[in-house]
Length: 312
Image (cartoon, rainbow, N blue to C red; front, side, top):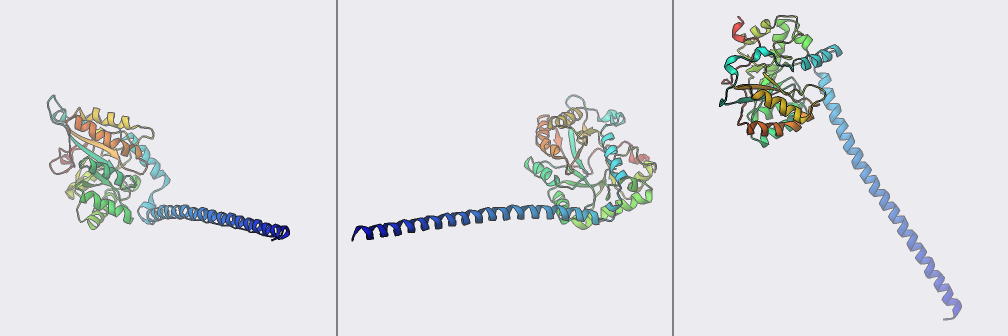
């Protein structure tokens, strides 16, 4: 083979190498593009699923005929009332419930305003510490929240009522409106869980300043239905906009130390992530105090601002 032929062969070899390198580059670019596209599809799919979940939840809420009646004024009143009612009235400090040295502390953790996204997390924490609590719930017709109602009952917690609509202006407009709301919620919870709720907490408490109707009229409705209502004598302070885990633990433990029976007000709305964070440390602190944490039942010492047995 002469030099000229060798040169031609070398050129052909180099050309083949260049083509091979170019093919490899093209393959790598295409493969990289496919990987990036696949990851983008996964991310977009996850976002679509999340957005669909949120849309479904909002749609269910908007389709609820009673909740449609809530106006911007209702929401403002609800928030104002909730915050104002955090303060525990001195009238709740009955002599026979004040703790003396050596007395046992019975504590009833109660959660208002759910079920919502944080309720399952609260239930997870309670299960971890084998603690039972009480949930005063509102009406929600989504399948997700129906499952939460059932979980509350199935795991041995007490399911109480907090009104179907949570619209203060509607609930407290008349005794007839109040009775319809209670009846609707009670029937709904019975249908979903198979359990009839026997306990109620007035939105804002029985000493709220929103209702223009005498609260004794609403208490009379509950008495007629043999439903026991509970206020609270210890507040976690978690309805405020700025509170910490330590604030909740301190508020509750200081309050509990005063009483033989403490009914503790907490909230489980979707904006109460700090309450979820505080629950574990709070349970540990109460257990360190040797407090007995219980769900509300027929043996619970009733905590009421207006005594139900004083209403005919």
